[in-house]
Length: 224
Image (tube, rainbow, N blue to C red; front, side, top):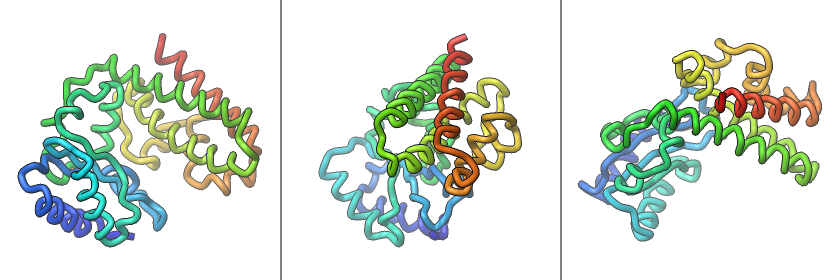
């Protein structure tokens, strides 16, 4: 695993050397941001340049791949103008899950309303419901465990927003959210923390049913 602060400092130094004043922002997301990283975790960066062309992507790729554990680097890179015009329903969780490392993300965000936040939660639940239904019908048996594990992860991100809408509290980690949940929501987070262990005591049908029922409830709740 990386030591986050020194890794980010080195990444920032190399990005500044390559892009100079064109570098507008650097942030951190994902499990390293939440303090939940493991040896298998990706390093989720957010990078904003003044504008991003294919040549810039080539330079950026060479920078991150040259860093320690650089093969684990992933995340988001964009020009500031298109980022300001990004679909607003995606921007609330994006903001809440991003730690500023260079610059302030708020300086590049458009106004985001509560309606935008609700729309994002509804779209997230609907997208996940479609994935689960399609996978239950058509995915091969060997692919289903990975699909369900990913679905639990996706449900966590939607759940963060739903919990914020109902409680006013945005939980930045799975541990924090888990302490505030009960019932099926709590079980989904527990399953996502160690899905192979959870699946050893349950069936795939139970997992599909639990996740699909939760998605449906969220969609109805959000549209009410």
